[in-house]
Image (tube, rainbow, N blue to C red; front, side, top):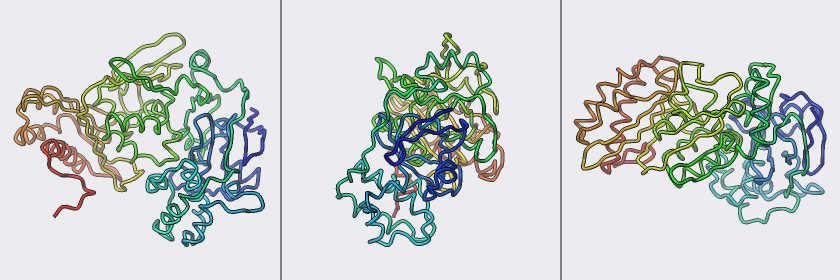
Length: 451
């Protein structure tokens, strides 16, 4: 497979296996060792690069980025952040001035993330740098450096333009091509953002052939607002979904912000997150609570199911060979959604429990309830007994306490390294009480100091 893209302003052609990562190629084939290998799973940010496509520049993790995903795009590594003659980028100079580096291992990734944020005029530095880990300086001098560089102009050499008219038979150009190819290759692996699949290669050393890369299927990457629902293509990144959710369901948006770094959100897709069927994925509980529908396709055949029906058992989904997730649709509705994520680390950690609550109250009575959890069973699952206990009842603390007693009918969670079964059950019950307390104006956020 021949891949063509820009690397630090230079056009390169690469003949490589489809699952060779950009990180390995940069370090082993090009000698660009500034991009570091840390966790090799997309968590630490040491391997951060800037990738520019038709949507503009974004940070991505090179360790789980396969070379075919770069076809026709532009890549800038830390070696390309400085300009001609070694002229420093403003963020590089600011890192020196504010003593933002000690051991230096994480510094290249920080500099790349800062340069991308600088180019996009982003000032939410805590979010933009949440995907980069530093064990030496702490974040204070790095944040000071980012702020100091913010007002400086973007250097001319940082402006990249994707390549045009680059074709490759292994990369379907639209959903119809994908559907036809996948129907004929039902054992193939579909790769969108590779934030999960990438680890199959870097950690499990699996051979994924044959594969199809979906990033050129632009018709899978749209969010369309219809009369009674929002249609989200399976190829939409979680960055796109976050931007949409911020205006419609802010609690869902905050959940998305917490479970992935900027680099991961820029690559991960909503379709991939659903299709992998993880019992601890944070998207499905929110989508189940929102009564989302899942659009599946096999060849020319399309079907729509309730998203909760997609998850049958651990590792088993309602998907036939050669069938793929095409889209998610969410009905328009008042915003009653609250999402609560419990994890040992606040940002970018796997949930011990993720609970999402969508409860309608009229005349102080519960008229409808959709409650779903991740981390409480082998699949993302609705709390149907809890819902039925609430519906029709007065919205009161007494009703909540009664509903808490039936959680054990819906869930028999397991104990593992993240939490015990008893802890999971108790915290799930407490999340329902939190929803109630917030609905009556009580402050419950653990991030707010209470007198």
